[in-house]
Image 1 (cartoon, rainbow, N blue to C red):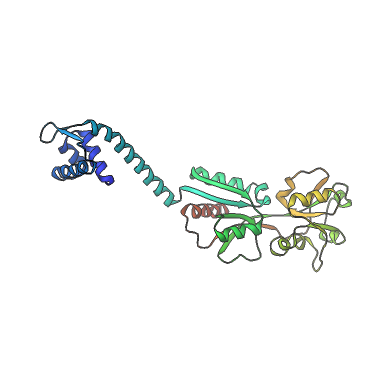
Image 2 (cartoon, rainbow, N blue to C red):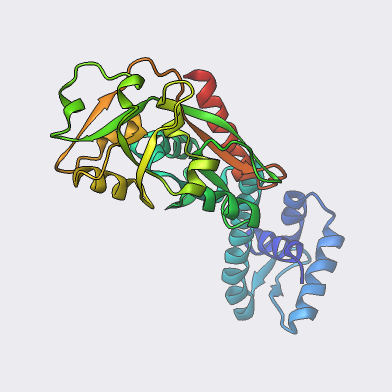
Length: 297
């Protein structure tokens, strides 16, 4: 049984006339009659009772079958529509990873909201994932798009483009002597102790300290922390000072203050990362929407 058999049957059942149904279907009446006969043979049931040569009525089996046939055709039409929309990138699901600085800047939420306005049938699975793990997940296919810190280089098969640039800010214990300064310059940081990210992150992704250091100077690291909340907590405890992306100054923990650094030109860059060979229409549509946002901002 094929969908065309159901369409032929529904047309005759609604018209109760082979001639009118044939015109509606744009086929000949004999062809339609043959197809209905084939359908009845498949079902081993009479669907129509003849009244005249072309006029018919529905049998009990025909009435029951009509309800199912109409529902099946409706579901098939819906499935076709969903398939076409998915093929255009208008429907589907996207898995997204993000780092905290992308979330606190509002970049992530605004990008998702903007895309959903035009693609309401797209769903998102969103999770906070550190940059290194995002690239691993993009490579193994468990993540579609990553909102990450811009790497020194992308892993094989992954690419991306910068979508946001943020200034660097100091996070200081509130009683620190620099907290009272109106202007803080890189030269004033030379003798300070810093709480930094893990070594693997610092080398590959987190250029915070080198970005704010005076030329030729390596700032002194006194502690390392696995995440930004731990960095700020250690700063609040007086373990040292930290350097964070601008958006993270929205994290308000007791005992710390944030200060801008004068004379620093380098920025904390954020990237939309994705697979080079991405073939999902909905993922490609989302990536294109991110590119469009950059052009208009």
